[in-house]
Picture (cartoon, rainbow, N blue to C red):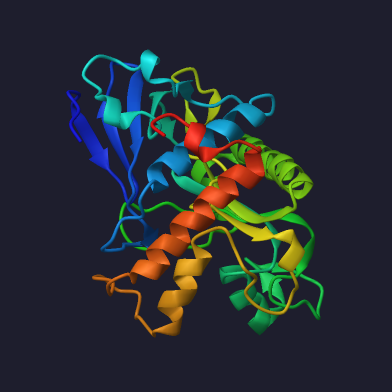
Length: 292
C-alpha cells in the first residue's frame, strides 16, 4: 500500500501520517499484537474490522465525550491516500495523548484475576471473597496502567494516576471511561454479548479539552464473550484476542520476541471472530463496510 503523506509513527497495530498541522491520518493495519509482541503473521481484514467497530462506537458514545474522528469516508481524506486505504483509515484531530491506559473492568479476568486469586484485591481494591475467574464484579471499576513507549504496561494506583494527570483530570478521565464502558456493555448485552472489560485512550486539544482517541471498544482493546456460552470458572469463549492468547499460553511461549509462527487455523479463527463481533454488535454486514 502506498500513501503520499509524511509517515510519523508506527505502533503495534496503527500507522500515523501527517495530514496537516491539526490533523492525522490513522491507518489500522492487519498486524496482531499479544503480550506487547507483534505476531509474525497478519490477520486479513483485521484493520478494516477495527476501523469499522471503532467508527460505530465513536458515534454511539459521542454524546458522552467528544472524540477525535473527522472522517472515515475516503471522500474526506486528503489527496495522496490511495483507494486501498478505504475502510482502514480514519482522519482525526491531532491531540496531545494522555500517557495513561484507561481500563474499565466489569468482570474478573486476566491480570485482575491473577491478582485476586492471591489476595482478593484488584489493583489494590478489596473485592468480595469467593469470586471465580470471569465472575462479574459487584460494579465496574477503573484500573489505569502506565503507557510506556516500550515494554509492558504496569498497574497504577489512583494516587499515582492523580500525580500524573492531576486530580480534576483524573476524575474526568475515570468518569468518561466508566460511562463509555457502561454504554458499550448495555448495548452489547442487547445483542447477546458480554463486554467484560475495555481499554480506552484519551487526548487533549490545544485548549485542554478531553477527547476519546485511538480506538474504542474493539476486539483488540476489549474482551467480548458470547452471552449464550458464558459461565464463570474459566476462560470463556471470546470474540477477541483471548483466542490467540490461549493458543500461545497452551504452547508455553515465554512471551518474549520473536513469537512462534501463528498456525493458519488460528489466523482464520481470529478473522472470523472479529468479523462476527462486528456484525453481532452493530447489526451490519461487514461486506458493506468501505473497501468490501
